[in-house]
Image (tube, rainbow, N blue to C red; front, side, top):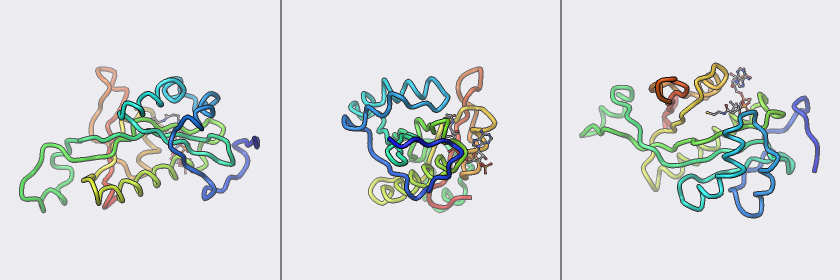
Amino acid sequence: MTEHKSSDTINIKELRIEKLSENNLKFTEVFDCGDDDLNEFLKDDAFHYQKGKIAVTYLCFYMNVLVGYYSLSNDAIEIKGKAKKILDKLKKRQRTYPAIKIGRLGIDKNFSRIGIGTKIIDVIVGCARVHSNSVGCRYASVNAYNQPEVVAFYKKNNFKILKITGGEEGDTLLMYRDIIESG
Ligand SMILES: CC(C)(COP(=O)(O)OP(=O)(O)OC[C@H]1O[C@@H](n2cnc3c(N)ncnc32)[C@H](O)[C@@H]1OP(=O)(O)O)[C@@H](O)C(=O)NCCC(=O)NCCS
């Protein structure tokens, strides 16, 4: 296995994404994005969630090193007046609108802040656009940690805050992005 440190430059175009499977499950053992819940989900739960069709997990490799992962599900979000442009064109407003949910996203801490998370968001949005031609899907959604660097990351990737979630602590924010017309 090739050793890489964050100081190395990596070519984002050489990132490879694979669906989690029995063949690549072993790579999850040493993954560390700096968040215990996200690490444990990948090691212990992701495969079961996938088998149960609750969330599908994808692994992102750089030269056979697992550098990130994300899990996707379907979602329905209440956007009310916030998507006026679309809603005005519909005959009847809906209470909720279809979205692809980023249930989990983590980048190995040795590879953070070099654009891998942003690349993964591009891949997710690109896939969602393709799938939206078969199954309706207009938005991407995420329950983001209410931490400045995480919110900055999603805002930089065109997500907006919809509401504070995570109970009384307000430790997560529901954020969303239009996958067809961003900005
Ligand atoms: C948040 C996370 C997914 C970002 O992934 P990443 O690959 O490091 O992000 P990128 O390199 O694409 O960064 C894009 C932007 O995000 C913001 N950002 C990312 N990490 C940041 C940090 N540590 N401090 C401040 N801003 C940060 C910046 O705006 C950055 O742009 P810039 O470098 O030009 O300033 C990653 O750091 C991570 O896995 N964190 C731990 C787990 C977590 O919190 N996941 C999110 C769960 S909702």
